Image (cartoon, rainbow, N blue to C red; front, side):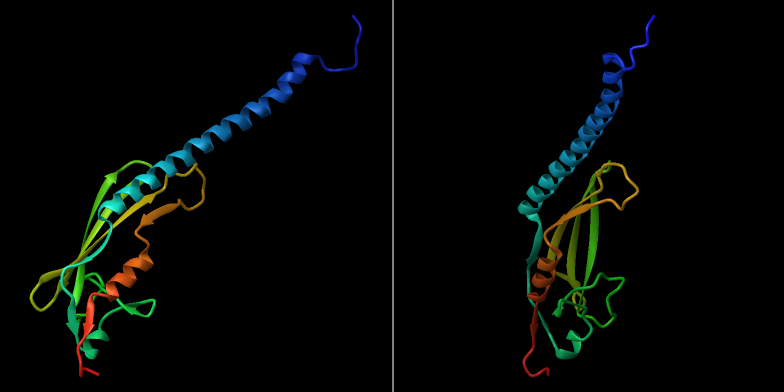
Length: 168
């Protein structure tokens, strides 16, 4: 028996093959998770196109003093949820969240109704859809996607109010 001084083809194929298989399995797993996230982001967009966003049922006249009780986002008047709204704020929001998908990724629909404090009448509503998680398992914070864009909601909320003349 003679020593040939080199590795046989079978051993070399094994040493190269194992890392290639590991990289291939990892690439397939990442593609699966990213594809699933893309699918659910697309579904969230579709739902959002149907009923997402804000609908103003009745504009609310407010005085300058009442405007000061409202939160501001991007320099515009907004609406706070009831628990965070000033007691003298003319409107507040209540929310109802429904989990549409309870596994990874989670998908939810949150509906907010804006209620005028003086008569408890619903004056607006907005719907927000969100996807959370669905990422390849890591220690990083999970990704999320939601619509409509929250800046659009802030802009739409500002349209709810009519500043009364002579209230300055």
